[in-house]
Image (cartoon, rainbow, N blue to C red; front, side, top):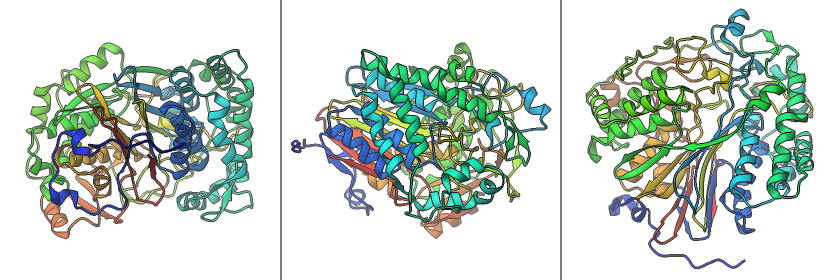
Length: 617
């Protein structure tokens, strides 16, 4: 297929409305921002990006491409996500540009009650082990997306993942490190995981080829179950095999056997085949707010997405020079806004009933509230937990100080540690096609280090319930049928009601923090997308973590040590408790863009870790 002629006016300034200065345009970048007009894909792994672009080249649309790429991510980044995990996506179609959310976050099983956990001696939901498993939502949600908006047959979409599972994929260095860290746990307590991930009896070396024939067989069985006269009927057949067939029954049978959890004890899981059948992925309208004239769309209060919207509405009260992330004043102002928004997350966010959700969002994103919250930002760093006043009593979570924790059994945290080192993470993929279909998706959970591998299926369950509280008063409490408040937080941008960008990043509590920095740099300061991704990043730890053991560091601020020393000194003088991480450790953001006037496309991806990639033409 011959390349099509590229359109003119593909510069990001044409999409955002900001005119960049010559100095900004001349800034160093690790790679170019891609420009073209056919299709763009960006993700956290080059094989997923290449897979998605391959689908576009074969006349698939953005939803075919994203689904194929996501199933490849299950295979090639098993320490970051898996079929037993969850998914949140934002999408807009060429026919209907209204942003909508694909809700692929599973709920708590029927027997996952606060009473059950307390009777087992828990004061927190553990970070590893099947007790912490929400109902897996990723696979069923991807298949639902494919049926509703895709065009390809399921067998063609899954062929890429099956290929890598059967023929092998390279072990990225981070995967090798994670497996080395959990070697003793697998050897001593999780033998089914050792058998799959350490086939030679030891952790694989970086770049060694690894296979997962069991998962390939699982995918083939799903395809075989997809009998029907239409494409949608065949996809629905596979979904039923997942929800009520061999997958659900194998999981229920396996988790009944007690196994080691992060608490150091052995417990059986409570998830059943009936819980699988209870889950139904849905589409719902996005929640939106404006920043510098651009509409930002996010998932609702059952996610942390509105944190980004709250922070942006606060920062919209400041001038560009006051929020420049390369200056001490800008880092300070952004960080203080994030602390306020994250405190509201802990106090008010959760899977609420529709009436409470609408009222809470209305308060949190109202102009008066954002102005009042912005007025609390002073020249000094706050080390307090400061939720706002919205007419209901704010929930105050346990504020446990971060300390050097003892080694736990299992790896509950999938995100960046305070130092910037990673024990795992999440994945992300963005796709835009030549017709104007666009999607931003953040799949996560079901990491190989989260719970023992189900030997008949070739994957582990996730541990998303660790984001709930064992407290009946918490808006994000554990309760059967309720979604945990997820950190998965993709983003869509629109101008004048037309989609212009899809973006996101792994990172747990940092996801919206790193996206906020990118949006300030591009929408307020006019940076090129790749330039904005490459520039030094930071995040605050002055909020209770969403992950076990749920600690916080009052005033905590983590900076890449590329940050100028004078900036670091000023931030410390302002009262921030600064930790310097490695120079290229904060964020794994990717983005695709579309100019709705010219149909020109762009893409950029994170260079950190030498793994993320953008492709397109």
